[in-house]
Structure formats: C-alpha cells, structure tokens
Length: 174
Image 1: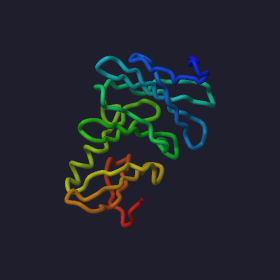
Image 2: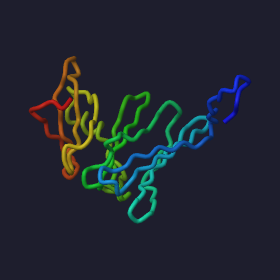
Image 3: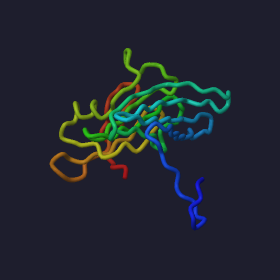
Image 4: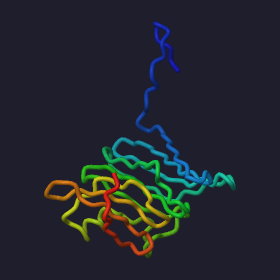
C-alpha cells in the first residue's frame, strides 16, 4: 500500500477494469459460491463459480453482463439446505429482482439457466410488492416477504422450486 507523507496508508484506488471477488459458503461447508465482478467503461460482467471444497474443483455456472448502475450480489443465505440451488439478488433501475439457479449449472426450466422469481411473482400477485427474499424455509422453499401495493405490510410466501409455485403463509417472516 502507498504510504503518505504523514506515514499513514492511503486506500487502494480501484480501476474501472479491476476484477473484484466475493465468496459465500454453503451451510454444510462443502461448497462455496464465488462471484467475480469486472467493471468496464459502460458495463459490468458478473461470473459465478461453484467451488467444491471437498473435491477441490471449481465450475462456472452463470455469467451476466449488465449496464453500469446495475449490480448482482450473493445473499448470505444463498444456498438451499441440500446445496442444489442458489439465489442471487439483482438491483438496477427497474428495481430489485431475484434469480434462482441450479448449483450444478444445469438449466432449471427448459433451456433457461435461471428463474426470475420477481417476475413470476408479479404475474401471479400484482397486488403485492416483494420487499425481500430472506432465504430458505426448507429444501425447495424460498421465503418471500411482501408489502401491499396500495400500502401496508403484506404476507410472506414460499416459492416452491420444484413446482415453480407460490404458497401464501399465515405467518409473516420478519
């Protein structure tokens, strides 16, 4: 690190084309999801790799190029309890979206590598707005919290990965 005249350290300068990495581990410690973020002049390329910590292997499962101002992130509770699925958060001008992927990199729906949970939810429940996807409520169940589109707190839902359906819950998960 560069040292200034007063012997303090100046923070590193991030260049536009610098590669940044983030990693989140699975609850059982067997896998890790690594995100590489490479910023360009007009866009950012995100790539996601599953690292099998038992076998010592790494496999790219997904990548996406987005305009500057849009970000992808890994929620801390991204892995399903059985390590079969992960979900990611995408934040941009159009709002927040949540992407579901297979941790193996195989397509989830026909030829699509991802399912965009937010769009599926809006199609079925236009009177609610997703406020957060908090994680996993079971092996194939993602917890979704909502607000009512006309104001006020909405219910929580489970998204069932196996059937691609939503189940309204009687209790709100906060």
